Amino acid sequence: MSRLPIAVLAALGLLISSAQAFTVLITGTNRGIGLELIKQYAEKGWDVVATARNPEKAHELQALAKKHKKVTVEKLDVSDVKAIEALAAKYKGKPVDVLINNAGTLGDVSKQTIGALDQTEFVSVLNANTFGALKVTEAFKSNLAASQMKKAFAMTSGLGSSELTARRGGFYAYRMSKAALNIGFRALAADWKAEGIMVGIIAPGMVETDLLRASNFPGKGISTQESVTGMMKVIDGMTLESNAKALNYNGEAIPW
Image (cartoon, rainbow, N blue to C red):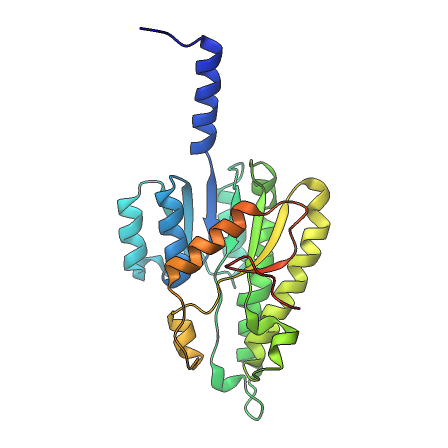
């Protein structure tokens, strides 16, 4: 029986261990897109850190974690700065190859329409969708820098596009939170590029989720499977030269 040289075996071992070492941290994974992201990354053999605001009530997520031993569920409310800092402290020194800020909220649509604007609701949406994503990414910068891939993503929406807004109004807090998210992560991409950390902005498309139903969208959305499969291709293909662009799940640019 032929034997491979020790050097070749060592190189193969390094490649295998490297492939197994990838870690993704995803916020907002109790249902919909977040849950599907967890499922597909787990099936690829990645180490997955899945956060949810109320993990004890996230029965599908808990079942997925039980099935895939590499999935770790953590409690996190992205509106809670102390909770973000505590989670980052817990994972200090742990490389995170891909960070996906999926957590967010549409908010109460009736309280973000002209004639019924509610300041408390407005601030709540901005806090979760914009500040929360930026704060999580800031908190895990050292984890990203220590990883092989060094990729952080914000989850945006076509409703945050200035050009597309001309087609349909309303959703003021949600729209403004996503527009602010876009510019914030574009600035972050510029700040971190010299350190080799890639910062991207992705949108899942019109996905058939509870959030889409709550928005009173008249049509039918695409499946979460199709959306997530597409977004993962966008994530895999991002480079330092292509980051900071807002891309849809199919790779098409979203107009500003």
